[in-house]
Length: 506
Image: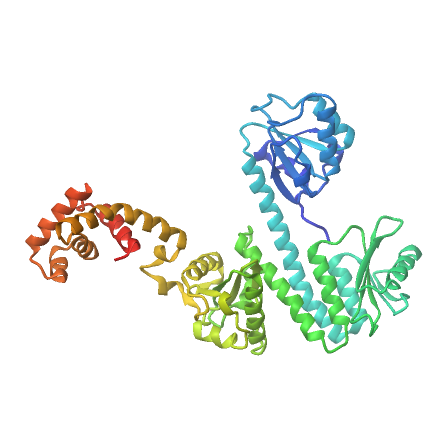
């Protein structure tokens, strides 16, 4: 199964970017896994391999040995290519840099000044996201076929289905590592011998390269001490994440023990989480059809955000929710990053139902999670739902029932601690003169202004709330304007003053 199609050669072929290969033409088939814009003379500690490094040469070392070492260490770090923006620090790419890149086999791309680095990054990210979605879609279609294969035709049929889905040579080995069945053809002696050696190592999963440079993967079927044999895959290159999921899924299907349903569910949950993450980052082709099983009969979904200080609290909540869903024959769709998790639910899952689903969760003590729930949306509105649930979680009370975004209407700004602090500071500054005036002169300007603002500038409503004549109120408001130096006849001024007074408190 091939990886992303985001190669250096493909990127150069995008006409709108107008990139030109200046060195390393033999290295254009390298995969680009991410983009890094770096203006540093020694960026190597921040590189992990597979990057397209973009630079204008602002901190390029001087000519000579230091510049050659810069290029050499880029290549040793495993970068896919170096994109050099011309027209800023350098009118042209230095010739000695190009010569060094040619020597070490590093592709160098000339980036013309009109081409923004951000445009290159966006192009590559879209390509990677589309490739991941395509691979994920293939995997989601292959998994049901693999499940049907093992049910209807046994292990041999499953091996054939797995080989077709991945493009690998797949085999089954017994406990000793001897190959018993293979597809599409028998393993050659070298690969078979390496598989037997890996199987004898007693590891649940292991891999190594054979003499031909292929990756041989051996995974134990079931618990090692039980010994149901091994699944063997011979791959032309290390498998990508989706292929690894399919291999793991096949191993689970072949494991004839009581843990089989739990492992199948775990595999499906991982795929569900990958589909959800792709949808939330906005892949070109939003995987709506992959998310539709999470929706209710009406085709609507909701997003639940779980927020807590400790990741363990979030994990415990999601695990409890998973158990509740499993008891009702439903899958979990969730992604977690540290102290926050987002869970895709049916549009009919209200706070009461969420509470019922997680009734078995352990007490979180002082670190109880805050739960925010979006409005019901169609599957296409998944990102809007995530934004709503995140905002609702910010305003939720720890340990309380999930709060919906609509429950915060009229108080969303003040629910955010950061916004509340800014408004409180603003309120203290704006209203201090009125408080001082009331204290020194025995007036009621602060209360009069607040009543006037909360009545949206309506004299009759505000004077009635205060129990004074409207002419009295007008006199007070004119005095307020004199003290503050503001024209409260402006709706924008009234809005700012009201928020400030609410945040400042009584």
